[in-house]
Image (cartoon, rainbow, N blue to C red; front, side, top):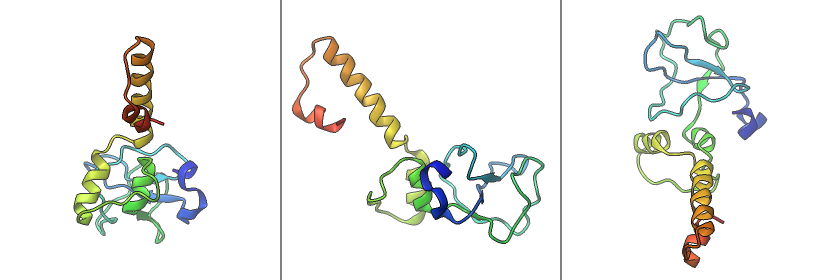
Amino acid sequence: VFDYMGKELDIEYYYRHPRSYQRRAIFSIYEPSPTIRGVNRPVPKTYRQHPGDACHLKEKLRPLTTSERSYIQTFPKDFIFAGTKSNLEQMIGNAVPVNLARYVGQCILNYELKKGKKITYRQLQLFS
């Protein structure tokens, strides 16, 4: 998370709503991000500290914003999303990271080129 957003987050820890309270929910920006889910909620007032949480509950603790979550999925900062906040959260959570999709597409394109298959100009544009 820090590698993508650095100090612009202005936090060291964030809350990610767990699937069950048997799992941790507080993460450090210096560790790999857990899976980005389609659910993004604030810290519940009834949340009990999990032994695996990266820190104790703090006032500055918050979930990542919709935009911040999209950056982790490697959407460009100028990408324009359309829809309700719930729809956006779901889209971002269900997305394949943009850079991963680009890499896989480039590998398929390279494979096809090596086999001698003709590639259209449009196909080349998609992955360059």
